Image 1: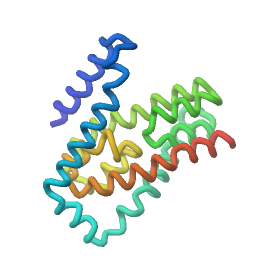
Image 2: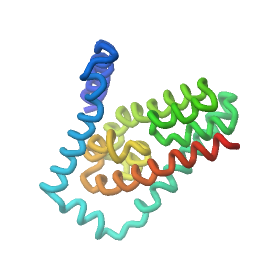
Image 3: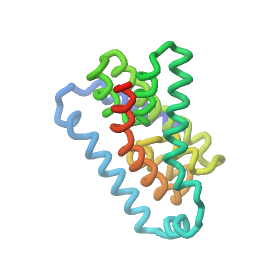
Length: 196
């Protein structure tokens, strides 16, 4: 399955590279495909709501703590990466505080530093790409929380179909929850760290 995921990603990169920059497809397709993905997830839930009901009745507390662990893990990773690469702490934390939301992290950090803004964009898009490449390898073996945390803020939208495919339909609810909380946290975290 990894070859299909990787192949789809590489095909998308090639198509995106070949399209004229200001074509209608280029400017409109991203949101359209995202809406289609969310529609398909909604259909899957409506067709078989049992996994969601089961997830709600399970009484498991660990998914409720997912945002805490996702944010803590990302920030600890940011501190470690900054120490190894020599990136100043405020910028390594701001980049890590993007939590996978590259389209917000890059521009927000660029206001203070264009170089670290580019790093924020590339690091967070790299997180999404690594999620696409890694979830098919571990999704069926590891608890669903691992795949959801890996997706970060994208676990509620772009990586949710992949996480659901490999971690089960019960991951839909927790992916939406974790991604929503992380998406609300991103602008706050980046603003706080840039003000250090």
